[in-house]
Amino acid sequence: MGSKNKLKRFKENETFHNVFQPSREELVDAVYKLKGKWRKDVFKNDNPIVLELGCGKGEYTVGLAKRFPNKNFIGIDIKGARFWRGAKTAIEDNIDNAAFIRTQIELITYIFEENEIDEIWITFPDPQIKYKRTKHRMTNLEFLERYKKVLKTNGLMHLKTDSEFMHGYTLGLLHGAGHEVLYANHNVYKLEGSPEEVTEIQTYYESQYLAKDKAITYIRFQIN
Image 1: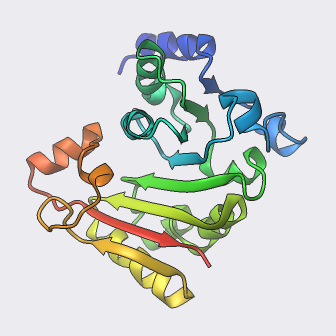
Image 2: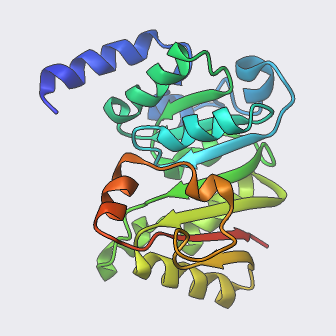
């Protein structure tokens, strides 16, 4: 994408009512104004809140919001030029239960209050295979602790990935740490029993993986 297109999208994001772009200082140096108030001040309802972390173009956030109108969905990504598409689609299609935040995922405990979130989706994260990159792996123990802080008791976690490494790493870590794996499938499009929201909503990159006959995996779990 050219720099002109990026700048255009950044400027358009600033006009979208469903896009929030707090600075690091706003989050870390003070109590963020929407922390604990997302239902009341943004969605204006009491419905459950579901996050998509690393939401990319926002296809999953928007797809889930269409599918579950009685839940609120928030896509989070540091790359605002990417989720511009999802935010714009939500506005064009009057999808009022979808919003987007441009921030780093490790800051979620500054954005949401304890027990404010009902579910978290992690869709096609970078597996960070090299050992020195493990601190950025989105299902490592540090990240799981962050998720646990904002999730309600028994809140659901979902991991959908094309990486066999990420799938195996996460399953091993969950079992080793005593977390509860509720469902695991190493090829959701080939094996029966896959949840509909896993197979009926696809990201841009997922369609490319499927064209190459890559297996798509899925885990649903709870952090104890």
